[in-house]
Image: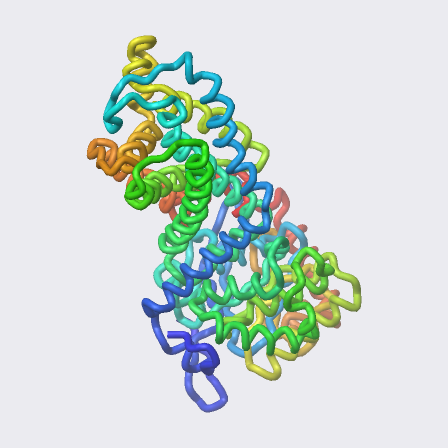
Length: 287
Length: 262
């Protein structure tokens, strides 16, 4: 165990790290992610403005056009803005996940990523910690959004604010680990715009975030199938049900499965011996 | 595993032992059967022109990538099999600037300390001591963005020393700095070797950074041409200075391998 102030001999003979040191490492990564977020006020503002625009403008405009029948977890007819709120929560997580992916590509290009990767802690732990930190920051954004939405009349049961936390965490983990996996595949920062176009928007629009699945099925069976194959669909439904005190087991299982898949892929991709980084490095990429 | 006999007669593992390391970027070979060992507590220069493979070698030593072939040991710990044990003994200053520009000096250093499991209280004290040693004590709460190139480099050296490494790797640490900053950084590192007995592996293409008392590894086109004390490398090349020896060695290499290494 490294004790601050320990002599060189003490440090060099002690193997491994204690549980407390793992917590210190996790805390350090959390603080750094938080500080970076606070230092980028535009990022916080844009993360709030985006869903609020959808809520204030899009939902208000489409309230009369898009009727929503009674579907679980709702027990009555709900206003359109109430319907799209869980989808907007998931949208914040989606953008945040991709933002952390962008920051990893940026860190890699700027060299900051190296300081993380040369830490003696296991690489899987470093990546999971980074994910955890990214998800924590994005959950705070979701709660800020839900607070504003409350004043706009979107008022789920009070218990829902607490019960939605695990759903937000799992959905955030899924989307952030997808972002991390993507970041290992992106060679340069400039290529990130492609991710925005080919990942974020298709995932968001081909989901029940804006309209219920049964409506999509009515208008386009093909799009309905695409929605069912979209992991984001299950994040939206998991959050929607949790916000009203229910568990959508199907969505929960899919989200858990996707976390294992994406996170496993990201850990493999950042592994120094097997990962995509090595293969990308073959073509001249940076670590 | 190579061992070096310490003064007390106890055999210590080499600070860094590289055996038969080969690495390629696709079809382009970057390192070819590289082998050498550096002794603990010495200042060893990795001397090579741009493109010699220095950064690749240091990336493999710091476990950013795994070597395709060969083994790398840091104080006896195989970097592939025991990366944690090897990396905790290693401090690294990368060629590219790696400070987070939006964070303060203290925040940057605290982050690094946490990546080595060092808590905030212990880290803060050590940060103050080390920053004072490099005359940066008054810049603790300044944003990294506001520092000059030389100051950033000094903060990066402090960062690399925070966890008390036994081996310090520096990749072209003086590139882009003015003469005074270069001299100051080099002096700081040499003082570390003399005072704390830390092992230093200093990668550079600047031959005037090499002193006669140093050890050297001459790397050219991914191959080690010579290794040992600078005086021995100079003598074995039949030269009078390390500058002449370097020219002779790399010149010989160029003429003896027409067609060049792949």
